[in-house]
Image 1 (tube, one colour):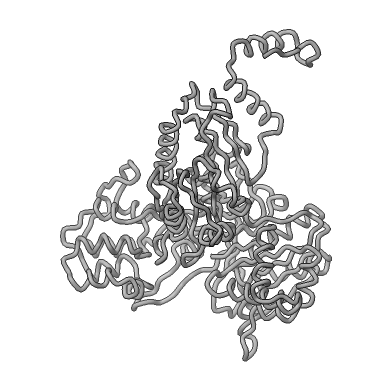
Image 2 (tube, rainbow, N blue to C red):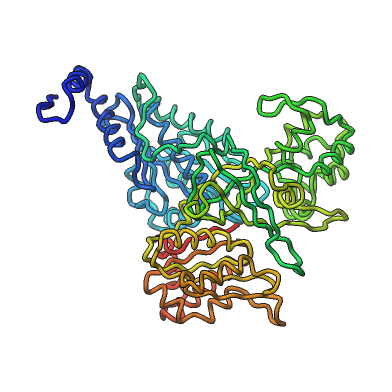
Length: 600
């Protein structure tokens, strides 16, 4: 290869050094250098949905090709997919990451290697961006895949009965179509990092071994996205100081909602409207004390957690789940308890779910104690205490080095004891201004504002309204021209109209084009946001025809399906669509990123 440097803007010394560098380079090294320079010239940015990593020292034409598909509701599967692609070059593998919503199914039979990373949403449903791909695989047009080598990483929550079902669906269907697993499927619980790391290594090592890919002298890859500047992450959370912790709900409310402001000063953490904050909570010290007493354990006894020696009390307070009884825990407990009735209970999923509902580890210990249980054995049985995600209710453009969250304190009585949500009760009852909270930013590319001139319809009852406060703050700062319509609902107008003064101010100023509210307890017949939607069917349909984007945030069990049904009825009545066409219409809105949901 010859290069003319005579007309270059480089100095004589730079030209000489570049010439020395290029001398003797083989084709693979030149491919890598070209990609590296392209990445530098673009500022390290690229498409949000496609990431390609080219193996160092391996020409693109000869490197084994791995397609990495992700189906993600909150972003964890996407983040792991990007990690897999970035690491692929270390093994001499050319990898590209594709959002399942953007994947062309006809490409499937052409794939050489395929990695599928999928979360499970709700009670066994695929995430929104995986619906089309899931339906294609289970439809009549799915091709034979005899030549495909694949592996699946499933993400889920073992407290749900249909744990990791979406990933299991993909795995079984790909196998039935003739594809061969290059690595066994791995099902990950909420503490997924270690298992995901092992799976990534196993997948890449198998591909490299099968394809005979060369190993680069140094670990190099062309990253599609610029690495975050902050050193703080899910694995290394930032200790944020609480600036404000105030009750947001009014006098007379039968629930407590708090507005909490956290300082991110000097953290380097950045976020966008639609993102979430991950909060690492502390279990109730009273519950920890009761557990230790019931087990007759010394809280100061040393146990090992994540290869660190700490006290048992600290392990139970900060690092282990003690308020939730998951099926895996119950099955392990049954192996240690010599009780046929308990074993029968665990074997019946319906009965097991009914018994564990509203109970915690203390209930289990009191009902079925294990005489030989040792402190370290207890710690090993319990899953990690996962962070809790809260939708961010502020725009960084408006609040700078702060982040705001909206927290509804969960408190209830169950089986003769008063109980509370791990994070919400901790933040509400035991954390004050000046205290520190371990946090990280959890990006959510599936819940993002459109262009500034496009209209948005926001549906957020209760604390589901949080991200829409961030949306309006952002649009105010950007002087965005797009219209904004908010549907808000809660129990009572006088006590539960969250952020009322801000919505009314934005409506007076014209930023909030329209505000529709529903308060379920203010009249005999309960009224919800879906009723507001139906009453404004004509206008909602008109906004959609003008290109409006729909956003829904809040309860996944009842609210989100009811809102979805209302939207289907609007599409049928106003658009003249039959039920199947109405569902296709909403599905197309989802494909076009115009129907986005953040439901939990």
